[in-house]
Amino acid sequence: MISSLRGRVLAAAGSSVVIDVGGVGFHVNTTPALALASREGAELTVHTSLVVRDDSLTLFGFATRDELDVFELLIGVTGVGPKSALGVLSALSPDQIAEAVHAEHDAAFRKVSGIGPKTAKLIVLSLAGKLAPPTASRPSAAPVATGGVADSVLAALTGLGWSEKLAADAVEQTLAEASEADATSVPALLRLALGRLGPAQSVGRAR
Image (cartoon, rainbow, N blue to C red):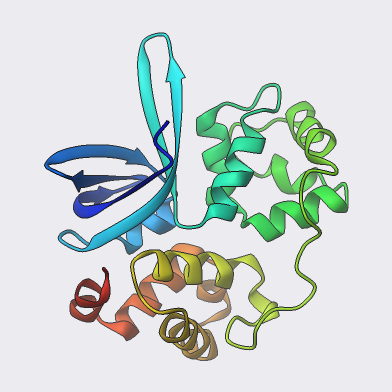
């Protein structure tokens, strides 16, 4: 079982990254937010799940352990495959998923491509009691107003090697200036935060 990878990013696009670990390039499927935040040449650590099929071995990687834990719970739900589980985590943060499950709000999952009404209800039923209650309060550096969007961006930045304080400051400052549309979009907010931090600094600090 490959539980994590740490190495230099060889390529990043769409919803995958290629990480060089000891001269071997590992293709890792991940969320678009993490792929967008990854920079070629920078060192990246991802928490991974190896999905074994008769004809394939596929790695899925995440910036945080919480995302990985939720992913593994999701693929245990009948009708939810690895790609659908990745889709859920691309659209919702672990806290948002926990909130939807605790509130029995299956509509949150129906918005995800590939998740139908029956599967959405199964997710809520199957994950009930398996997730910690959603965080009631968040640090001031990750405002509650943006919920899981700020959390996802913060996780992507810290996963790249930025300190939590620098990443949180960048997210907070970016949120203060972002439009409502950008503040509610993980890719848009992440792009703006990276612009504030600067790509050269991002590569230099990732370790």
